[in-house]
Length: 442
Image 1 (cartoon, rainbow, N blue to C red):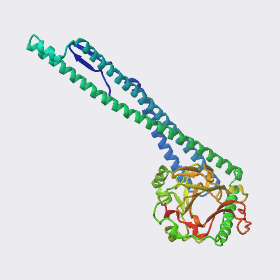
Image 2: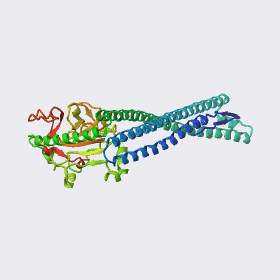
Image 3: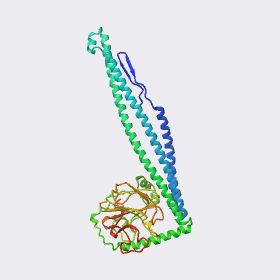
Image 4: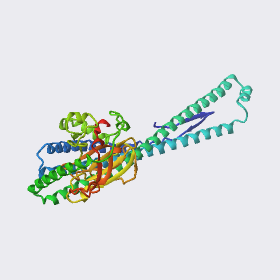
């Protein structure tokens, strides 16, 4: 609402409030916001183009060069995302400045109007030495009486209109202040996003440096490393199956949430999952799943069918450094890093959360862990960043759902004196019936 002044008239007295305009400053700020938004649209197109490159690279043969290329393009995409976030932060700061000017203008308008009304009332009071009814009775003519009456009516109308105007300005002022508070909250959220994105870049660069160090930038070394990981993982899985089949833990299905209840949320942001939906053609599903639970269509559709012959969770493709969130509130049961044990190609960096409803959730192959054992977490709380630690030939999150009753955290050496490469690595160990299909609860 742009106020151009207020006129109060009575008995030949006219009072005008001055004009309070911030149009020039607001216009300059809006021009900067518009320029930021134009650049933001270009950055969005750039981010989409990088994603297309990553999808193309992902569809090719797994070679050292393709792995390095994927990490390089991922870093470029993250740099564009960081620039986009910085643009949003700049626009949010400008919006706050614009609103602050507007608030100042409206507060000045309110103060001036209030002063003008007070001044008019005081001047009227000074000139009124007797009540209006007395002036009408003693007037020399009907014309003079009508003039006095008309002036009084004009004053009352002007006063009523000005009070209504003040109320309208106060309403706009309250709205501006609410909008400013929302803009500041958005600014804080964007700053958090920026910090996460910068951490993602660091995680991606660290993974790239490690890959180059492990392979000495030679394709033959890379293929040898992949073969070693596959052989070690196969041996580990077989040993783990043998141990799990003898674990004396009983799972009561009636203590588990109902299949299809949707008690768990996806461990990624809504924006990430929406992007997965847009890339259905690449994965053949809406969730970026690269490997399902179990080994048969029946296993994929039912919760308690794992018998050691298939995958004990689901794999979700995610660039290194993607924020991972808790699927449900609960307590961090444990965290670990199997890479600390030489020759152990397993979960890598992992987190397990116990939810108090009969379910535990596992998040593994992480590049960073942001929680500690015993910590209380809420649904959707950031707990770490995705990666490709442990047995992973590409960046993804291994997401598992376990029956709490049938799960323990231990080293394999503690159980039947295992001597495989992962014997001294701390990790979740479960009886076979404790592995549940995540899709039954998401």
